[in-house]
Image 1 (cartoon, rainbow, N blue to C red):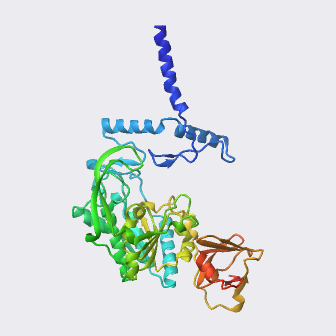
Image 2 (image 1 turned 45 degrees about the vertical axis):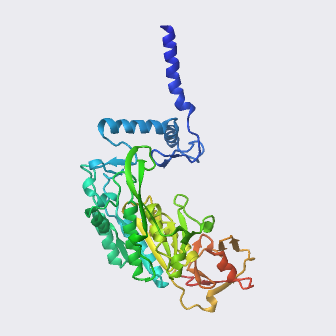
Length: 461
């Protein structure tokens, strides 16, 4: 009897010891079960109160305890098997086996944030049009907007704010398309543009095909050489998905898988990737050149896009444009002129899904504070400043692909431009201005001269 007690105690201690022995101390660890960064070491941060420190310690232990993901998965599967209840932190069950992203019970009122967002879009459009470049904003529907009849019973899904937001765009004269009605029409016609289970937050390849064609068709009105994809260009198949995205939750679903165009015609340019600035959390970037479209003299387009296009849509756009440059829009679109300066596009598209119009994805303060240069007016000689790369207040960081020029002239007031083959907007900094251009452009415009021309206007405004 005593031996049994000893063995029981040993087994119990071993069960307690396993999670401690497998404690996760990895830096910048991400949980695949709920797709988020785990709490970092609470003793490595800066100053904080005792209560804040205790809270961080508790979160750290809860996040890092060994077998955490296994325990969450087991608990999730048990609830699914016994009660048909989804307790996953990222997903929720709808009707008839449909799965949606979590958070559907949250009401989304129309606020000053949406007004500010509409103002930001209008600023970007005005900037582009002043330079003779067409602009298009694209609004993508969430899965609940298209498959509303399948959302969970009793869900408070209020989409009235969308109508008010689109009215705000209309009031400002913004050029936009809303893909909601298109996705609903295809769904009512029996076409599954969203999967039942897999990737609960985005359209699938079929939805992306239709949505991207709507974008290309709208662009074609301004740029006739834009190519709109056709069915005969597609290679269509299905892929078996056995678990939800960023999760080990088991499913069994065949989802559409499209490929399009000739891969040998599309060249990717990763060479900009290392030097191009992006927000650390949203760093998706691509530069595709389609040789087939070059022969057709199609356009070069700069896209600020979200996960709908990053995940499924990019291939359809690469097939429709000569040069397709895309930047993850969250937080990065507020640095709009930085990317415009570098790539000098023929067309600009800003795309966003309805659930991303929040402070999490687009920081409200930065949305409100977006400042874009006008075109320089009549330039007088006294408005032109010559600077040399050898000046104490000038630094030129010349990279393989990009060159960053900083001019520390004191607190900036009016706008400034760097004049080379064209006028490049300079961004205000705490102690001057800066601008980033292609290195080849910088080199070609030196012409053996050891100075640059900067235009400054309205210094006392």
